[in-house]
Image 1 (cartoon, rainbow, N blue to C red):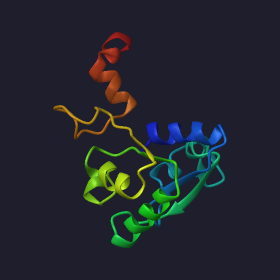
Image 2: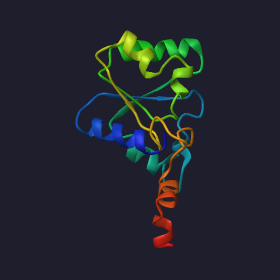
Image 3: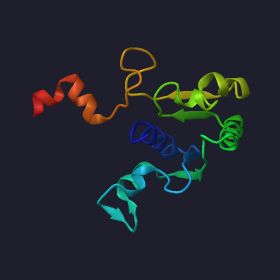
Image 4: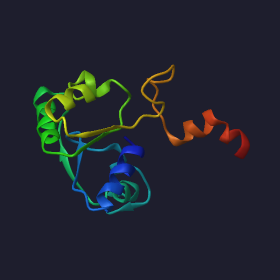
Length: 140
């Protein structure tokens, strides 16, 4: 939810797609406050990867919030999520749940370590990938 999902959907928005970013109510996306640099009160990083997007605050952990996400899925072409595998399924928003109500949808699940395997439940960030791959050892 830090770079892979936002960057993928930034590209869709840049190509003209209507992108609706779902953020948690209150604070919103954590990256809104990453910085410096800031543009006004918002992180330049946040603004750069979330350009060409609309934003809505929905509590997906709440049954009403999950219902709103399902309603959006029915009228959407693509569903991009960037959670640890199984997290959205716990909320009734996994691939199997969404395809029942929106069989046409392209469901894109971006993870750090894939959908199966010994590291499946770990979060993935660029620095972790550099360390695991040995790149940090080479570059210092």
